[in-house]
Each structure stands twice: as structure tokens, then as C-alpha cells.
Image 1 (cartoon, one colour):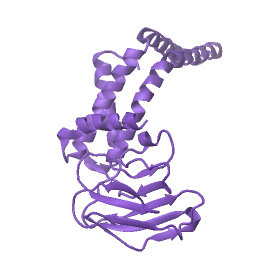
Image 2 (cartoon, rainbow, N blue to C red):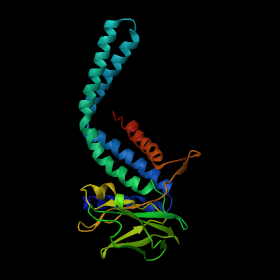
Image 3 (cartoon, rainbow, N blue to C red):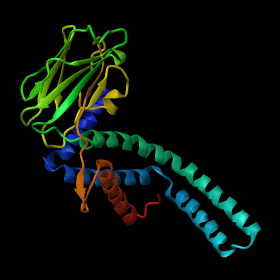
Length: 273
């Protein structure tokens, strides 16, 4: 899964490279491209004729209910026919829907990892939280967090035995990604804090176990299996984008962009969705 996640990350790095620091433009264009790809993928994997037939039957049954609103027998028959047509549609469309989901989920996770949170700016304060594996006491485990420059780290972390967490307060001193090293029991773990205003992946969390974790949480390096760290979390502020005269989250921008991207090929190619 690590190799698969890495390949997807490199693909999106290449797609977003031309946009540089223009995060909104990159999000809109890639969202529209994703919507177009998914619409074309649905068309390629679906039986368009059977989908069209099921939808035509459904429309006819609905029209029948509107024409004969006072005939309970015809209304019941039309309603049952509409339900049957919908079941037929779901049966025919299930395979392409599943294929689209398999492709859409990695796309969604990549965009969420890049645009949901905002890169840190000079002066921003954040928390770095290390969760220890079961059986370890947060009060006694030797732990240290060091920055190679650009990030100030409070040398006295907060230790929470109940949740096995060690929390460091940090502050970004200058722009640019900051390299940090977390050391527990003389075992170092190197990672970066994202502080450059681009479209790269912002690593916010990682766990030491879980087959799908590289796909679900890209950005931070893998935690070695023999590490005393069970999970690592870095807090970032949520990002928002100015579109149509208002501020909105990345998901709203993604839905708008992907809808526009899907509608255009669907209209031009008469794709039955």
C-alpha cells in the first residue's frame, strides 16, 4: 500500500506543479479534471443502453402517476413499476459505481491531504503529539523533539498518562518547511512540518499499524514497527478559499469543481448517469 500511495502522491504532485502557490486554482482545476475522469470511467464501465431503458421506464411511471392522480389502482401500479425500474437501475449501475468509487476514494484522500489544512505561517503555534504504544508510561519514557531550524520547540512537553500522549508546543519562526526529529528510547523518527504555501501534501497524522494508513494519511513517513510510537499527530489550521464572493472549505470547492467537470462530458457525450 505504501508504494501505491507514493505513486498516487507523485501523480498529483505532477498535476499540481504548474499551479505553484495558487492553491485555489489548483484545487478547482484538479477537481474538475477528477469529475471528468470519473464521468468517462462510468461511461466506459456501464451498460448505457440498459441504464437509459431503466430511466425511461421510471420517467414513464412517474408521468403515469401525474396523469391519473385519482385512480388508486393505476397509481399503485405505476408506483410499483417506478420502484422496479429503480431497482433495475441500481442493479445495472452497481458495477460502474463501485469502479468509480475505487478510483474516486484515492483522489479524494489526496486532495483532502493537500487542501483541507493550511500551511503554517511564521508565528503560528502548533502541537506535535506522540501517542505511545500500550504498556508504556508517558511519564517515564525518555522523549525529545528537536528542530533543525525554522521551528521553536518547547523543551518541556506535556505528558498525559491516561491517553499515553506526549505533547510538544511548537512555533514556526520562519517560512519554509521545518525538519523535526522525534526521539524515544534513542530511536529517531524524522518528519517535516509543512510551512510552504504550495499544493504539497500536508502530513497531519500517521499510525504505526494499519494496512491502509499510507493511503489514508499520506505526507508523514511510515512509523517503524519496532518504534515505541503508536501514532503521531501534527495540528494545522483549517484552510478556506474565496470563491463566488464568500469563504468556503475545500470540500465545497471540490464539489463545485467536480460537478462542473462531470457535467460537461456527460452533456457532450450524452452519458447516462
